[in-house]
Structure formats: structure tokens, C-alpha cells
Length: 140
Image 1 (tube, rainbow, N blue to C red):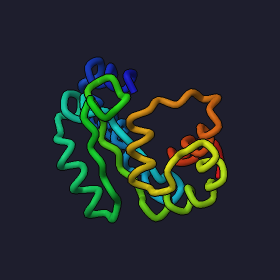
Image 2 (image 1 turned 180 degrees about the vertical axis):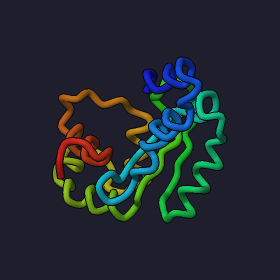
Image 3 (image 1 turned 90 degrees about the vertical axis):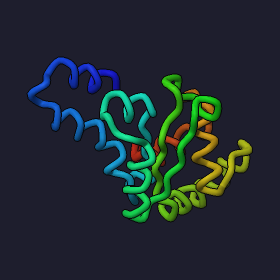
């Protein structure tokens, strides 16, 4: 993400392309990518937007939005806005039920998003593949 932020500073003639590249993380949220997020710093200071405005736009598209401040988020730049496709995430969590329950992770989409916002997971953690799929990475 930081490379995109540098791009905004280094190439002022290409601001729209850089802005769109940053927003792509949220624009792709849906069945193939049930969760997306952006740090609040990026939204406010780089994109010059308000997180609440992005959340309202997402909700108008049928997505859910959760805003986590620094006290509830492991993102070090002051929190993050998470957008998620509740139904697609619910299906992913149900299909991963055994691994989630075995590791004491929630099956509720809102609780799952809150947990990944709050807790940075090591790539070797048993739940990491589920989180990767939630972000549209690592296959079906």
C-alpha cells in the first residue's frame, strides 16, 4: 500500500490512476473477495476522503462496513475501514467451520471482521488460509 501512497506524491499527473488503484481494494469486495480494507490514514490523508462517506457508498451497494479506531485495530496507522459482503463471507465461514471452531474463531461475519481487524495473524496460523480467501487471495 505504501508504494501507492508514494505514487500519489511522485506522479501528480497520474493522481486518478493512483487513487483508483488504492480504492480497488474496496471496489472488488463481493463474492470472490468478501472482505476489503483501507487504513484510515490512507483514506483521510492520501485519498482526502472521509471513511464514513466510503462506508455509506458501500452500504448503498449492499455491502456492510465496519470502522475500527486505533484502539480496536492492529493496523498501526490509526485504524481501518473494513467493507464486507456479509452473505459471501458467511458462506466462506460456514465452509471453513471446522477449522474456525477448532481455533476458537467466530462464525458470524461481523465478529470475524472485528477479530481480523484487532488481531494480526501469522501466515502459519491454521486460520490464515481462511483469512486469505476472505481477502480474495489463495484460491477458492
